[in-house]
Length: 61
Image (cartoon, rainbow, N blue to C red; front, side):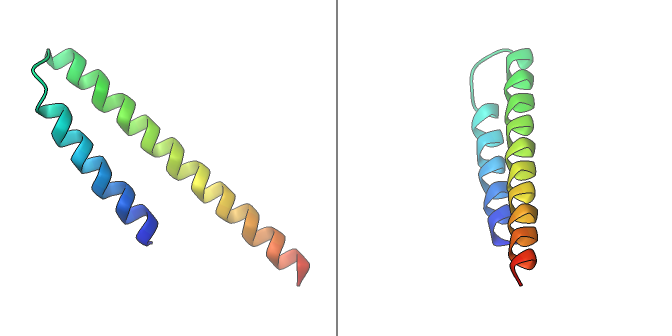
C-alpha cells in the first residue's frame, strides 16, 4: 500500500537523522526505540480503522 510505503520512507529518514546526532549511543537507541514504537502504533491504528470501515461498508450492502 502506498500509505505504508510513505511510513517506511519517513521512518528511514528519521533513523538517519538520529544517527547524525552528537549524543551518546544510549540516547540514540532510546530515540530509535521510541520512533519504532510510534510507527508500529500508527500503522496498527490505521489498519484497525481500515478494518472497521470495511466492516461498516459491507454491513450497509
